[in-house]
Amino acid sequence: TCSSKHAFLKLVADLNNVPDIHLVLCIYKMTGLNTPGVNDVLSNYGLEYLPEAHCFLRTPNGPLDVTAFDSDFDLIKNDVLHEEVIGPAQIVTYKVQMHKKYMMDWAKEFSSLSGDEVWRIREECLQSLEE
Image (cartoon, rainbow, N blue to C red; front, side):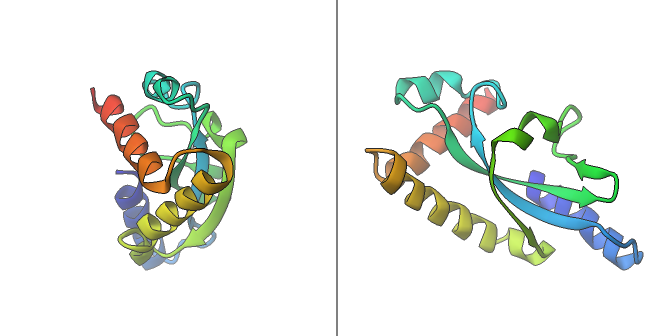
């Protein structure tokens, strides 16, 4: 839900001429420390982290993460690998395409697993978060 909530708030800011609000897509190192609940899955595959996509708003007062009630960008700020400002319409297709490409490239360079295997492990991590 990080994408839709932040894209909606960016649209509201734009419609109300609120300056300096930016929708940011980042890729961060998803670990058991910054994303409690994924450690067992990562450990099962011998992975320290997986690159995960996340959206937030950059504001004059700092990053704003409204993904969940207890979301805190500070938990991942030191693990960010990539950041880019995107438009609200880009969360539908571009975010997923960019994330998959990033993950495929990462798998080739940092893992003996294929990009498809890494994506499947990511899905397993997300499933563990829902449980």
